[in-house]
Image (cartoon, rainbow, N blue to C red; front, side, top):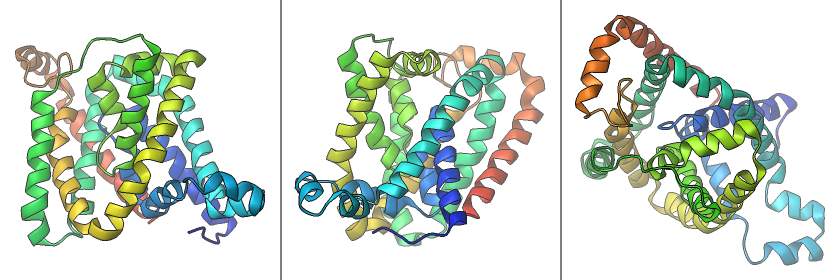
Length: 292
């Protein structure tokens, strides 16, 4: 599992972590997608899957150094530092952009995710795409059309549950953890907690993330090892079906709201700039894929 890396390659891991953290700040963009297109996805899931009932005894029987090596903690720690730093740096910035020029932000990420569909899908067989991919597309589109963001929740146990759900989504190279937080009505409170460093919410959310990681990673790793192509074909369709959620003009999180059309009409002058930002998103995906 652990890989021998040069200093430059370790820097690449840190940069990947920053890209994943920035992606997870925005609903609709998956850190798992960034991990996949930059070539570290299986190592990431496998590292989390290495934790289990034998991990704690290993710490005492083999020593901290062996524990660190077996669980690939150098990789996870550097990736985690990059993610945390990126979230702290970009949460306020992206939150401000979403308040001032949301169509441009969504345009950028629409281009990024659309390019991701092509990047992942072109490596899958046609047979898998017209079977599992079509099913994934239907599920993604149904989720976008059927689910609306819920109201704000303030109980700490809700943030714990949100952490469990969000981190399971984060591990998938298609589903955004912040997108599911948005559906649960927790995105704005979590973004506020990050910006204000409100530790009760952050610690509770982190605890839920740890539980979700340990509980979900083993099953996902097993599935990827045995049925990886089918899973990725399904997720390719799922990403494509979820794209309407990133439409730059929405009202109350829904692009089907009649007021969304009025908003588009009022901001029609932004359309060319949204196109430019979408192309910038495509270019960003191409640059990230160069790390693969």
